[in-house]
Image (cartoon, rainbow over all chains, first blue to last red):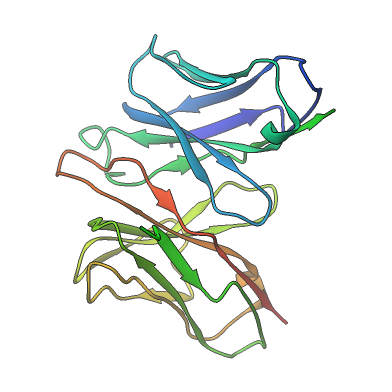
Length: 115
Length: 115
């Protein structure tokens, strides 16, 4: 069964204090791994898609990396506006399972950045 | 582009009442999805559609129904509301050329309270 586990559940950072969020996954063939940001009371906002081990993507203070078993979201010198819940989701390869078209989401990591 | 829009933003229902959650997208996406999000849990797929007239069950379809008569609209129907359906509901859409889905874009959500 496909599974996605995110850690830690919550993270409190001082402004400027870099850290990493983890997304561990078990899936029968990975087509893509997605990172989303979700602000309170809003819908998830797309950040990155990673397709193969070794791939990296960056956006401002965020950098996502991917291995065969996990993905990391690195937050460098965070600012208070980076406070949000970060969601990870995996898309199974439709050739390996019948999960075609279905994302499996983790529970998220809630990040709070204080000034 | 408005993206994905959802109405209403918030609703209180009594047990046994019915309602329809509306979802519209203006990105000409062929795939549309309904998820529910409960505290501390990942997003769970309720139903999805790969095009007008085609729908299929997700992970948690019981108690819900959908229809897709146009590319733009994908309403979610609750027939007999139960307290277990108290949740935040998100609609999403994506475009796929046939080899598998691409990035999903989410609406702002509908918060539903069943009492």
